[in-house]
Image 1 (cartoon, one colour):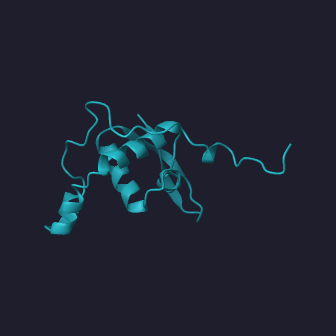
Image 2 (cartoon, rainbow, N blue to C red):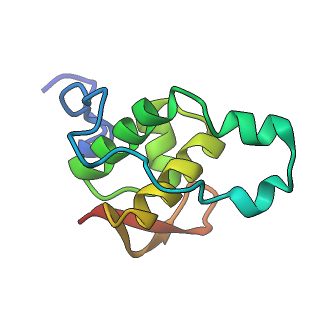
Length: 117
């Protein structure tokens, strides 16, 4: 056995995630954070970001690979916390993922664990 051992399945990577959602899985609903924009033009413009679909696909692929917290999805995908959290909110709204419990983060706080539906 070598001196290096894999840290286990937490850090294994799935096959390349798809870049676009299959038909019917696109974000056609209203912005889940619209009430937080308060008419701010920059905030509203950011909601039209063309990368949102790719980010949604990455987050969904990560959760389909195994149940994960937002922190784990951030590490897995390389996306910033704000992007992961927003995409998780959209996927929950669309019924594609659900919260199944909590587990501790690196800092010891409890975080929601998500599973694909």
